[in-house]
Length: 115
Length: 115
Image (cartoon, rainbow over the protein chains, first blue to last red):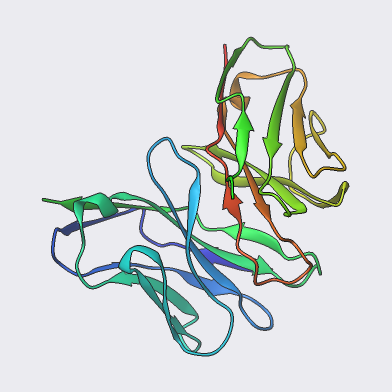
């Protein structure tokens, strides 16, 4: 079965420091991977996606993610964290086994950036 | 382009009642998905509609149902409400052309409270 895991419920980082939010996946075939962010009382917003090609994907708000096939990981990164980055982050994979490409979301990681 | 809109934003019901939530996707998007978000269970997939047909379904009881109209607007209905149905219900639309690389665009959600 296709799945995605976010091993950390919460990540704390000081403002100005680099941040990493972890995601690992399990798929058969080529992975289609996504990151979304949710701010308080809001819906999810798309950040970036990996479909094919360059392993380093750049997205919105200065975020990037590194696709690592050998480690089956797709970690979200940012070189310098801002307090405004504090939010809930979701990793997702498309289920390509059913032919309808249902989204499968991770459990979410709460990022807290401390001033 | 206008984003995904959901109405109402907040709803309070009592056990045993039924409720209908509405979602208007981004213009031109034919796929609409529904999710239930709770602190304990995270983001749970309910169902997806594409061109008025249910294309995917999650593991929810039959009390949860949906439909999509010819203009791609979608409604979700929950009958015989239970306390555990209290949640944020999110709607997401995508171009949904049948390829796995399309990202989803989320509405702000409807906060349902069951008393």
